[in-house]
Length: 462
Picture 1 (cartoon, rainbow, N blue to C red):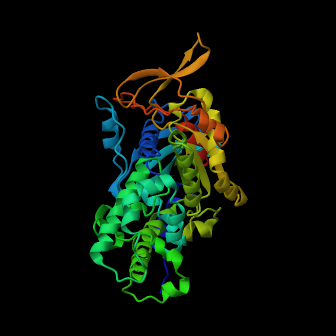
Picture 2 (tube, one colour):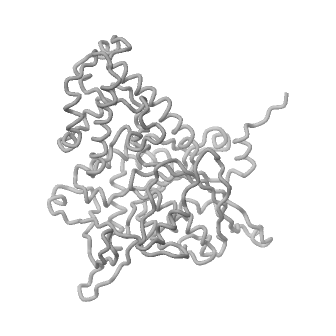
Picture 3 (cartoon, helix red, strand yellow):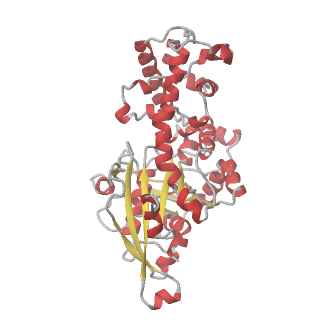
């Protein structure tokens, strides 16, 4: 009997391993993933025409010819709402694209001329297929749970209960205060307590919190109301030994919560991880450092802890031919501080330094594994313009706030190192949200999207 490669492996081989990239754009909620993907598609669609992509080598040399959207590769996923995003930017007043609330995908075919003399003389062109996947940042927060048991997770959630978090979770903490692991499970009680827990998670996030689990509780989608989303950490487990907990009957509160936790890992998190994250080969990690600075020391420290936990969930490593066919791994990573247009240009270097220190532990692991990585400060869609105030010998930003007020301002200095107590005492930085600039046609304004694209994909356009 003749043996053939599985279809998805044949597709990769037929396209050419250097002609297809599956790009993961990763970031927590409100880090700017939708804006980033909209800008990336827009810049490449205008490549070779009027796009400002001077930092892409292939564009400077006239070899980057443009891109077009292709038919959906995965018919079970929604199409990334690129047209809807552009429409929102063209409204009066302009509006930021609607944040991601589910999985979506878009495929681009990018045409370019090779820099190899033999192909260039013959006028040959090549095509790079770029697959882009978008998903809610909330769902990312579940990936670290794959390395935990229900008991481990309950202890982790208990350790996260700082005074401010206890305030946001007060109703749930009060409602579960007298629970015991050995009491019989009650369906209505589980539903009510899970609802209190979910409401508390929303308050934590709305007040600057980042480490929120389960993330799917915030955006349940088709799982809303299902028992698989009706569980919560059982804090009273701390008073019991592991042996005593495991000896409890299946109908006990502990065993019921544990069963739902395990089912959540098996049927919700694991398929999401296997179907998407294990197949990426390039990655962008977006980090909203400025909002964390604005939210204070507790939120900033929590962002750092959260990013370290998330980065442990991805598969990194250089891959040869066999590994590329059977076990793809991310081999190039860009980390980007978003909303760089919300600070003056003279603060961008400090923003990159701060991002590098914030991600120091994950970046050390990448260097140890010989994975290429680089930090950027960018604005996917620039909302402000930098102005030079000659009379003050200083830089300022000109833009329109989310409330519709036109301002000329200096938001403050970004620390180039992890903030210390003196920085927080000064409160020298005040992040201001801006509306996007009006846009009708042509390429979207940006800061350093071309630098990131050249570094991330430039080797594919050679």
